[in-house]
Image (cartoon, rainbow, N blue to C red):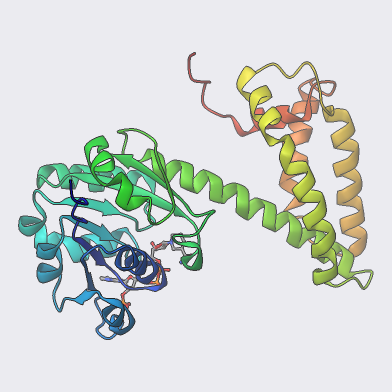
Length: 296
Ligand code: FVH
């Protein structure tokens, strides 16, 4: 039996990320057609073996799998609304960063136009595409995911989160929120130590070591949050409150704004005021008024 014929892929959007995606498909031998709104961004890809299309219509017509990697939700509609007739029956994977509600809206739009649709979130930077550590999250049509799983794995590990089209985007944004808040905490610390003459670069080495070490406690924290039982503390809220109050005071002394650490103190204070000081610090999660735990 011969090798399976590689799926013809179309990539719409040749920004830094779209170009990296297209390059991964070309490298793996997929017939790859590329299109970009502003001409001239396809030269390297064409030199590597891609076919450049001068219109969205031509590009879409060339692909069994159409990957959109555009600026935002509005640019996806601007690009695809005029070509729904040609897209009908072709598999569309949207890798443009789109909010969950936007992903659901696109899924409804696609269903109305008979376009099998999968939404995706990219947990990687452009140079990471196709390299170990690149991860892409998908939700929407299981059929599209199953049909193209091997092709999608060329970009990074491919994880499917189910038929609800907004779920991959929700997980994507939840992960990014953790990342941004962690970096903001680093910026706060760097501002504090600057008052004593330490550079951010020097502080970063220490922060990297500490944060790297404590990250391994996340799975246990997640399990405790899911259980809803905070009665056995790893570190109790009274202890954490004393530490964060001291950080607030040291920050004031260093002349650093409390915009980042202040809300953390508020989360703790609300639980302590409610009488939970002897329970685990993970209880500050409850200050966020999370929705009820899923059954099971
Ligand atoms: N770059 C990254 O690290 C992140 C990683 C996580 C996921 N994001 C998302 O990927 C989408 C594309 O990101 P990008 O880095 O390729 O972005 P740019 O280099 O700015 O390229 C944007 C492309 O979108 C085209 N475009 C913009 N507006 C329109 C429009 N109205 N109609 C058609 N195309 C449009 C733009 O074309 P041009 O300006 O060259 O004509 C670029 O091809 C994005 O959702 C990230 O959040 C990347």
